[in-house]
Amino acid sequence: MTRVAIYARVSTEGQADEEVPINGQIDECRKFAADKGWEVTEVFTDAGFSGRTDDRPAFRRMIEIIKTSPNPKPFDIILCWRSNRLFRSVEHRLAYSRVFRRHSIRFVAMHEPEFEGASAMFMETVLAAADELYVSQVSEDTLRGLKQIAMAGYSTGGKAATGYRNVRKVAGLKPNGEPILRTGWEPDPDYAPKIKRAFEMCASGASGPEIIKATGVVTSPSSLVSLLRNRAYLGERIYNVMKQVDGKTRRRANSKPEDIIRKENAHEALISLELFDAVQDVLVRRRPDTKGKSKQSPQTYLLTGLLWCSEHQAFYTGNTNSERNYYVCSAKRKLGAKISPCRNVKKETMEEFILDNLQKHVFTEKRIRAGLEAIAREKIKNKQEDDKERKELALKINQTGIELKRFYEAIASGVNPENLAQPIEERSALKNKLYLQLAEIDRQREIDLQIPDITDTMVEDIQEKYIGIFLTSPEKLKAILPQFIERIELDGTKAKIKYFAAEEQKVGSYWRPQGVGDKRLSFTISVKIPDGIYIRQTCRK
Image (cartoon, rainbow, N blue to C red; front, side, top):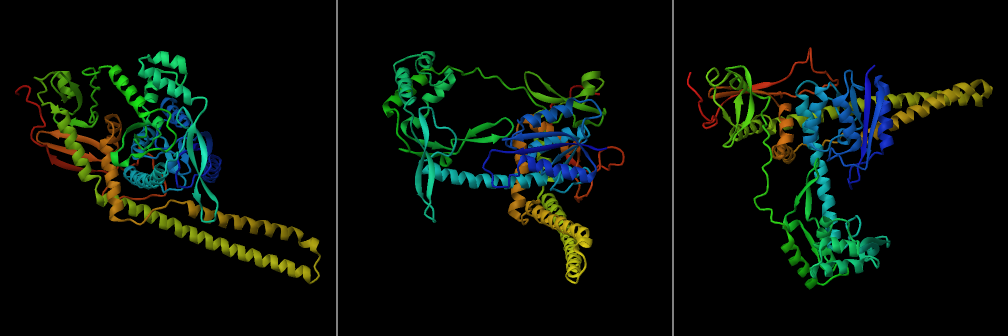
């Protein structure tokens, strides 16, 4: 029997999409699995975690089980209510889909079509990009509303800064006359004096440990520095200074100056501007000199396992010396330059050349539009099937109603009601069951995969999202590239790039695992290698 692991998640983010409760997701997945004849062996749940990060306890435990369990794995399928419960970014979907395939694990989303063949990866990432685009739009709308709240001087959520406490205030009236309540800050009588004392001690030259011991406002020197730099103690409301740019590491970056909200006199100040400036001068003088101490991060060779030497039938591997980073033929490394005199390849030049070709030949508007159209056709097909099933249910309900009416007419004409009690009960139960099935179809239609009208802007936005993949960390990019490239064969001045993608994308109603019988849809292009990609000829033949 096919074994299934269910994964369910809800987030804490203020998302506009319908957040189906975890128990509801699990119940629907169990019913779906039972209808397929699958056995549910594991259930993984993450409550209160965003799908934009893969740093989720149950998710990490599930991945660890997949990677470390010996064959056969404890489950064959990962089943989700919808794919955005498992992934909220294209990068994560690409990286972990590769993990699933390597360990022969199938991924199924209840309310999304399945795709068949090697082109499924392209189709799935189109779907993921469309979903991520929708989430980004929702986030922008949410951020716009939060900016308005911050500009009015109110809190956008979370705990107040140490030294303040949250208090509810009336910010206006609704059209129906009810008050609009917002959260503001007021000085905390227990901690506000300690904050002021911490600033005064720092300005007078006290050390970090001395301030912490005397005030207890924080527990570590680094936290103390952050507190002493916080302009909120001047009465300012500052919002959107940083933005999250990496869901996996939660890395953040400075927002553009025009996107930062600064509201003066938003709440009562705890210190004066003169005292704040004096403390900043002290912190600058105490800042350690880190000039020249940064270390270069280790090199990541993106094309390892992809770059192939046609002459010696061997892969190129990465190599770094004091002068440069480059790829070298592994046959040359084993046999020596005299026996294998192929040239070394410049790392940065070769990687830039391949990424440029990938954008030009795979992430094209034509392919993305074809993928969206295929998904839309699948949605229309599902709707037609729902309409057919709905019509059949309506006929059965009508027929059951006619039978019940005849029973009641028979009773009215003198038939003993006890003789018809069981048939009436059976027909009534059947009618209620049919109505429930009809209601379920209507409910599923409301929450089913939503594909907006395909416009040039939508296609361009998804293409931009694909291209943005190349701006991710080298470690992620190295894991993603094998999803699209099978091999890069170098032969003198030419390169053959074999891609995992098809000109025509096909949607299938069933999944076909890799292995025997799986025709990997692919295409190969031959391109001229640009001048300067080779380092030098190490020796003559």
